[in-house]
Image (cartoon, rainbow, N blue to C red; front, side):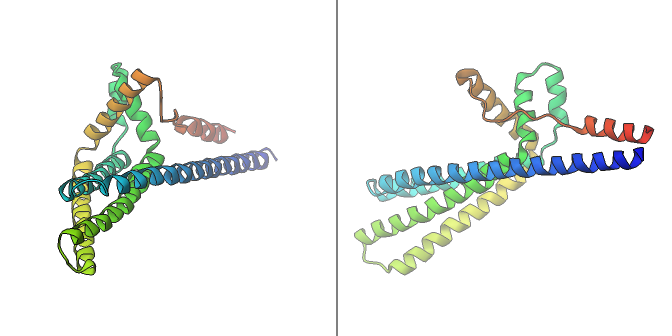
Length: 220
């Protein structure tokens, strides 16, 4: 009877864990959806109004800068998703303050990668497309050219630079994940030191608790 009650309790605990995990996911999905809407609206408005008032050369520079932002955040997302936590524990043991922020960054790898790769990446893709359309209109003002051909060439160029840049960023992120995570952790540390804002919720591992529970069940 005791074994049956233990198994029932363990099943109930697993259900509770699954429910809390799903609840946290839903909360993050709603939050990131709202953030993305306002972030995309603000950046799209800024890029379109800015690009309509600048010269053609500056418009190309802004387009290239938008592509670089997407590549840079993709680099961070891949580095956080692939980095190991152990080296930063050694740094934290030596009282390196930045290491604690790097550890929290890795423990929030899912939301961080989602924000960097999906949110920022998709927004940069949308804005670069809109920027390309505005550049096509500006080129037509100087020379009478086919808008369809210009649009295809510019969108192909944007896609090629984005994909090529992200491919290079992926190789760098996988090879230098520790250094990149440490650099981002350093930025977050200085930001927290100056403003008191901490964007990452503190998470602790629960492996030890799980092991204790399994050991207690075995002893029973």
